[in-house]
Length: 228
Image (cartoon, rainbow, N blue to C red; front, side, top):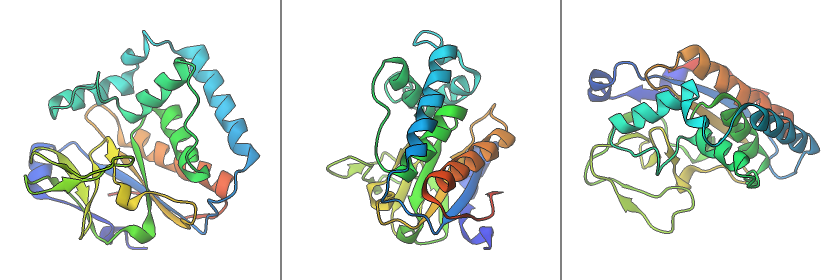
């Protein structure tokens, strides 16, 4: 696979945010329709570790969470209202709320986000029209996030990941309903989003962990993991 065809960066984004990067991985030939009991074992192990090491009061000081929060403020998002993905999932655990049960593959990569605190996206590869582009939104762009009933208008300041037809992610916190993973998904693209202060080694490690989790739970083959 030529990863140069997967994603490109708009120069305006790179000029304003030169320290941003994305790591990608692909897992193919998965089966996402059957629940593997190993997944529950993985969940309980990670939940135990979270409860042993964090509290609602101290989670916001976790170093990677702090970096994502700082970046959110920088791009005009209030992280006390819209939490970074890893932090939001950890807070659910600390609040004794059930871990989200969406599908085996989605739960598997969400566990990688909880374990690493890295913002990750998972997409049904077949629903994407490549190449993806990281760019600033325009005030004509609309976006329908997962779980949203209607499209919302973007204000033109957001950083987005789009394909040739649609926006698939508002960087780095919300994914599109139009490219989400479903029970019949057989090939998944995982993206891990960097922010200032978080090394690319950590981003790549989180993407690799997500792909490995998916393979354990859903089978399949991990294709090359690479920084884009």
